[in-house]
Image (cartoon, rainbow, N blue to C red; front, side, top):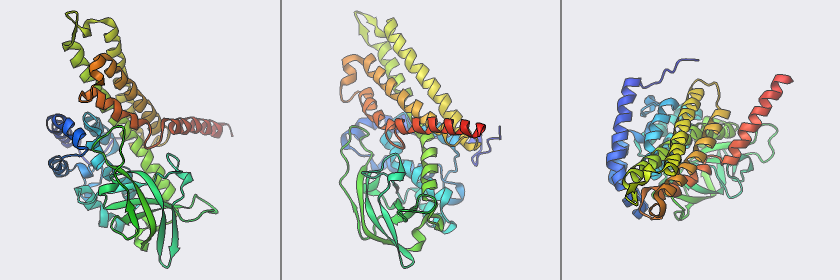
Length: 392
C-alpha cells in the first residue's frame, strides 16, 4: 500500500485534533440549545472557528488552508460530528464539495482569486448542483449556460442550497450543450453572489439541523465572464461534481460516526443514572443489548470511514468505497439515534434533550450528497461492471 504522506505531519495534526475536540466539547456543546432555539451559529463561535482555520482545513497550505488530507479530514469530522451538525455545515462547503471543485479543477488564476478567502472564511462558497428535477444524479440538470460573446448567460433554479442565504460565491453546475456529441455537456461556473439576476429565496424550514441555512437560488439571465468557467473548459463539470461528491461522501460517513458516538455517550450516561424501581436501567439486559448494538455500529462505522479515506488518498478506490462508507455510516447513525431515544424512554422525546435533536438531525445524512438508494446503485453497478471487465 502506498505511504500516507500528508501535508500536515502527524504530530502537528494531533495538536489540531486536540484543539478542535476541546473547542467542540467545551465551547459548542454547552450552547447547543442556543443554536437550536436561535436557528443560528453565534457570531463568536463562527469567529473562533475561522481563527482556528476551520473554514480551510482541507484547502492546501499554498492557498492559505491547513492542508489536511482526507485521512486526517475523517478524524476531524468525527470530532465535529460530536455536536450540532450546523457547526460543521457553516464551513463544510468551503472545505468540501465547493472548495474541492476549485482545488481539483480550477485554473491557477481561479485558485489565487478565491481559495485564500475561502480558507480564511472571508468568502462563504455554496455548491449549487441540486435542482427541483435533479437531485442525487446530476444527469437530469436543467440549468443552462449559453455562450454570449466571450462570456456566458446562466438561467435556472437550484434548491436546498446550503449556506445560500449568506454565500459570497456560488459554484454553479449548468448545461452548456443540451445534446453533446461526447461527455454530458455540463460545466461548472464561479458565480459571485452579488451579480444581477441572482435571487436567493427565504431560509428553508427544516425538520432538524437548526442553525444550518439552506434556500432556493434562482439565476435569471446572470452574465459571467470567461474567467467564471472552472478549469477554463466546458467538459470538466460532470467529473468535478462526481469527484467532489465522492470525496464528500467519506466526510459525511465520518460525521455520522461522530453523531453516533455522541448518541451512545448520551445513552450510557442516562442508562447509568436513570433508575427504574430503584435499579439503574443500565443493569437491565435488554438495555445493555441496545447499548451493545450502538457500540458495534460505532466501531464498524469508524473502521469503514477510515478505510475508505485511506483508499481515497492511496487512489485505490474512489468510487465504491466512498459510497459503501456513506451508505453504512448514515444508516448506522439512524439506528443508533433511534436506540438512543428508546433507551431514554419518554425523556428521549422531549425537545431539549440531546438525543431528540440528534434523532432529527441525522435523518438528513441519508439524503444529501447522494441518497442511500443512489449509493446502492453506485456500489452494485460498479461491482457488476468490474466483474464484466474481467470476463470480457
